[in-house]
Length: 393
Image (cartoon, rainbow, N blue to C red; front, side):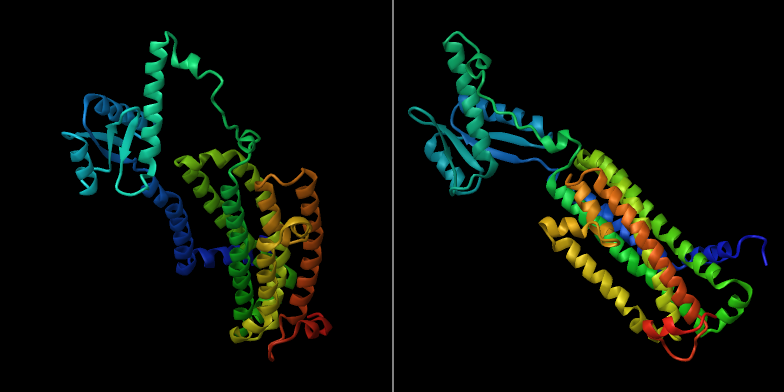
């Protein structure tokens, strides 16, 4: 035996087995690819600017459309507004109806008219209306011997995003990131939890556990399995978080980075403690089974527990949601969402962490007790209640 602590050997083996598992590596790779696709693909649909062709009948109309193009390109370099000169109003109407142009701009008796095929002109109507207004204001100001700035002084309304000033983020982004946090913990808890349970039952089924238990104390075995899988889960989380943050810096969503960084700082300890609170119980669930086929029965209570927490965490509102965010394990799902939304005081996540630490101590003691009593039982699966009555091996 190595001079190292036995649990380090067990943890190292758990990590090595998982890192050489093609399914695990492919799953992690696909998760990262899907995450990058979710951030990058929308840019292909939103990145192209608007392109308009507008029929005009005179030089003034041509100048207005050209000025509109300059205005549009200040917002998006790919936008364009192209004037198409026609003979008269009748020709402009024909061009619109035949679909040769998007609309036509013609001078009326006292105002400009926009000719379109149907009532919906999209963004072109509002853009041209603003351009005509700006051009008319400039002409009127020049006639009155003043400036456009003087005429429009005090008429502008500026929108101030208070949430952004306070380091928050748009509500839709906060909800999406909170949902992603909750979803990741849910899947990590089930995937790595089942890995722990499956590792335990495979050793029982092959009778290797009898050799291991003779050489390594039972609690050292449990500690190695739990910590090995915790390192894997936490490492996968860190990798996905790093890819997300790097990806956001290349997108317009980088406005959410300040608030997101703080939320991730809180999410990491919640994730770690929440996972540890369940890991020993997953190991105990594996020890209750004698064959791989029995795992579904022995792990069902844990799976249902996580499903209920996940559904409740996403659907509760108001005071019920606030109370739920302090319940251990559920706090890993809900409290980070509240932090993202800016709905918490500093003491709230601190109190939730203290509560989950206490709960973690209880579940570790409970899981270790079950694990020690059921580990060498190989004659059929055990119920949770019956396992507690067995003598310690």
